[in-house]
Amino acid sequence: MSATATAVRAATAAPRGRRRPAGRIPTAVLLLGAAYCLLPVAWVVVAATKSGSELFSTFTFLPGSGLAENVAELSAYRDGVYWRWMANSALYAGVGALLSTAVSALSGYALALHRFRGREVIFNVLIAGVLMPPVILAIPQYLLLAKAGMADSYVSVLLPSILSPYGIYLARIYAAAAVPSDIVEAGRIDGAGEWRLFRSVALPMMLPGLVTVFLFQSVAIWNNFMLPYIMLGDDEKFPVTVGLFTLLQQGASAPALYTLVITGALLSVIPLIALFLVIQRFWSLDLLSGAVKS
Image (cartoon, rainbow, N blue to C red; front, side, top):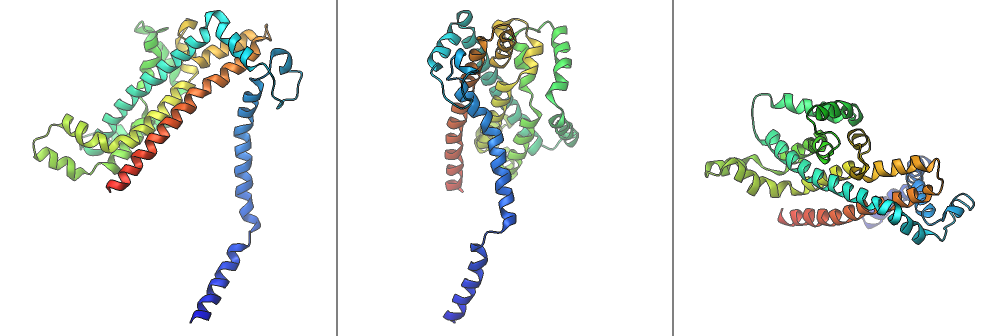
């Protein structure tokens, strides 16, 4: 019996040890995809360390010696307008993502756990909104807000960011999976109001999914270019994406600004990396606590 089992294990272990040639193709494709994504990032990191004289005269991936000088020049440019652009991006991404997550949580909870006429129609319209490119909506949104007298203001960038069809879709899917309808019905029988059921029962269960919505929405708003580019005319209200674009346009006549644009692009990524690391930690802890509870 023991010899038979050993022979069976040997027969099954042998094929696992062989590497099939076809199995290397997905690995090669993944490596190519990783190189495609990481090489531009590596170029930005290296180019930000070069001074203006080193940028076009040294090997592409050879680090330079001008990082501190570039940061100082970027901070001094127009009395520190770059840091104002960064603060504007933090405002748009932070406030916009918080409001969008709140709207998504309420909408997703209602669509998942409440039965009302037209629910599926509303959900299908939201699905259509997920498929709609944001660029197509930018000009109609500008015309509407200009008619209301809100163009070229912080509200003109924040208001269209609040409603996120993809965030509502995620919240609806997560609420349907995480919030048992029996618990909600039991709360109603005990006399709890709808707002209290949402705040005390559903919201804690939906929290990991809402963290995901907040992360996606804050990254999307931080990287958004077309909407603030169309809405805003005053460069004091620009987010960092539009501000760096205007700086790049000026670099066509003043090549010294190229180093500032590259350094600004590198610094603009740091808040997103920090946000992802902080939320990822919270994400993991929350999922772990949920697993322990279950």
